[in-house]
Image (cartoon, rainbow, N blue to C red; front, side):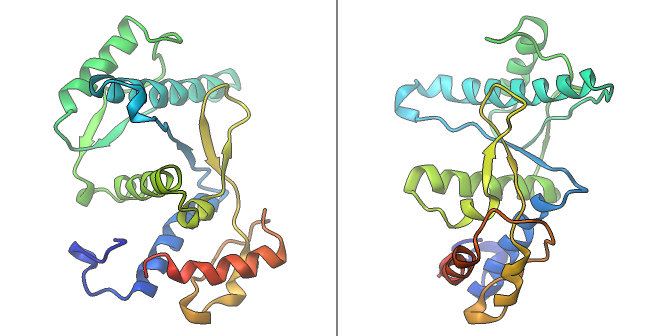
Length: 211
């Protein structure tokens, strides 16, 4: 998407930028109440065999803890873990079984409705959305690239004592810059963490996302 390859070949950069903004702006929809769970690992601190296990443990246990908080609030929910198809499917299934029946560092997984499921990314828009979010989190920590990361304006979820993040609102006032050098349009009507000055400066930066 960023480089204009595959199904995005021939799509103008401004349209690709707009697609990113439209997707990430869904996180600002209060009715959807979407949450983002992310685990960032410094690879050189772990053996290659431990990275997948550690990251799955962190994300799965935090998601399970979130479901536990809902249960305590008299809102019982069961979670589904859906991942992109890959060559580590068997390992994930094994880890899930161990974390549920034996336990992990902080307890056991108790609130999932099913074993992890695997879908091809082309068949699921949610998988594609998760890929896009993960990409911009990666760019932020790997290269210091704030552009896509700032669109999400992630912050710690205060209800949980683990590195869980969720989306705060975007600034609807940015919509007045639509059309200015290809600047993307924001449909959100939520309140904003950005100041008026920062909003204008930031909007002028966005067209260079995929330049």
